[in-house]
Length: 200
Image (tube, rainbow, N blue to C red; front, side, top):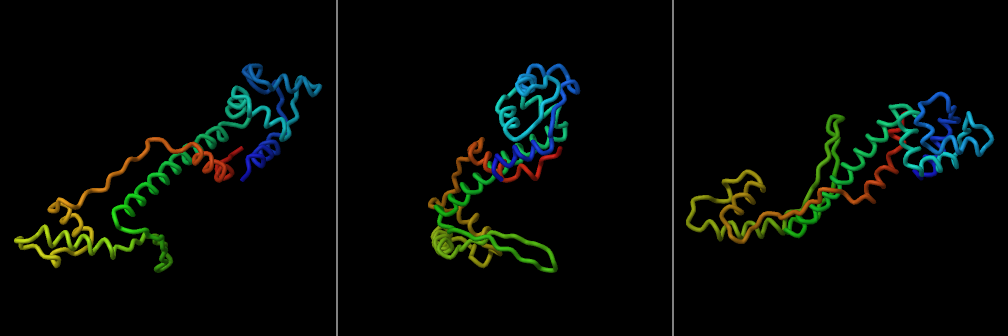
């Protein structure tokens, strides 16, 4: 959704602002000034251009979101921002993990979905062929003289963990995860999902 569509959406739901219906905080906004400029100091007719001007002024926007468009609208904005923030952060973490996995030799994976008995199961499949050969080589070198054999492990990850514990050549993944997402990604998430949250 474009941000211009959002302004139209607000204008269509708001239509007009009757100044006397709100607290005196309204006089700390640009609403009375806009109302007078259109020849009526009691009622402000709202259209897209008016919404844009009001939302560009921080004090006016805060007043509108808290008093004019109800608490549900205010909290829906906060929820949209919170979920977009967390979604952007998780997405960046995911990319960092997968990038590190690739550098570790695991290979790039693909998402796949199964629908057994009407249920959805989404998994991330990674080709471990090349890495398995490397892990197996390190396992054999590090377990010379031990009683453990490859048949003692019932899955790939147990084998990797065992090899990591005994081999000096196998290292853990090293990740540097940001505490904050890129604000551009947060904005993108907000613009894509804002209409799913708005409640007038």
